[in-house]
Image 1 (cartoon, rainbow, N blue to C red):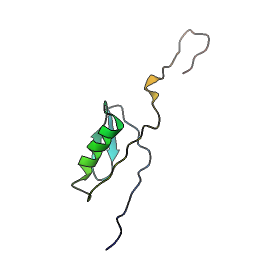
Image 2: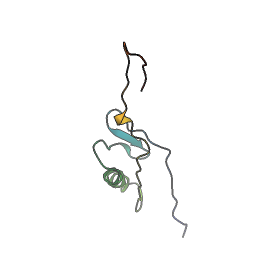
Image 3: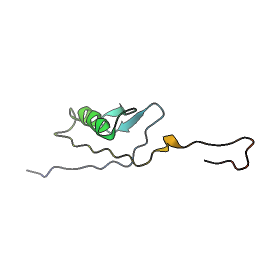
Length: 78
């Protein structure tokens, strides 16, 4: 019996509509969910395609607390 095969996806960016694109599944909405809730949603979406899928979601960067300053200021920037 062949050993189970694992696939690691490259980092995914949450699009402005709150979804990520997962191969063989399509777009999965993750906005407003914790990493474990997002993993559960992705895992559930993969179940028809894969035997016992295992999904780990990690927050790599959170740019939501970043603001841009522009206009008539001394120094424009993030």
